[in-house]
Amino acid sequence: MICLQGGAEFGELCREMDADLLRRAGGGPVVITALAGAPGREYRTAGDNGVRHFTSLGAQDATVAPDVREDEAGALAALCRARLLVLPGGSPSRLLAALQDTPVGTLLGSLLADGAFVSGSSAGAMVLCDWTVLPDRRGPRGTVVERGLGLVPDLLVVPHWSGGSSRGEWLRAVEQTVPSDVRVLGLPEQSGVLVDGRRLTAVGASATTLVSEGGRELPVGLSLS
Image (cartoon, rainbow, N blue to C red):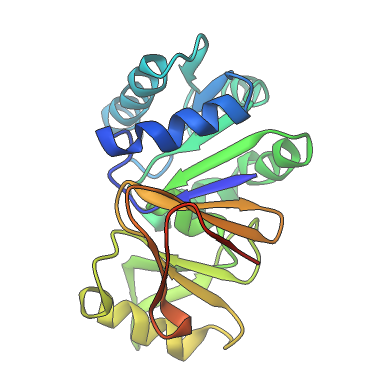
């Protein structure tokens, strides 16, 4: 089971959504790896914010994994313990490279197959899908759209969603690149979808927008296949 969130992770309006994830994951262990951030202070700050958040929700074991870009063995040992693995936001390009260039990307699939939960916010949500926008990279036609990890097939998410015009360049790049049968979701901040197999359920503070289906909304608590 995967939770895709639209950003502003660890905020007050995330508490109900994340408390439900923590309950589903049996209380943890919760492991945060902030690979969308730069190594060092940025990585540690995002990780520490996650530890405080999940500890306040009742997690007895919430930790920041060592940065795999600096300590691969230590990171993998920490991540293997996770029943809820959390990927905060930051740079989608940096995160995707870190997951593809280290064993962590493969490990995510193994954890999911073993019944663990993965939660990604903003960049963390984007790269888990079949396709991802990489707004911090530019190609000949503007914004770059590439294949993601594919842990959530046939899906692309647009985080920090506040309406179609706010991500016009992204959506034009998506339309030019991804197959027409890929579902595009607009995820507002502190909101998202819970992916359980082929079923999507809107969670968090606000409805999810089905961008590729005329912009209709999926209200919080409702599901679709």
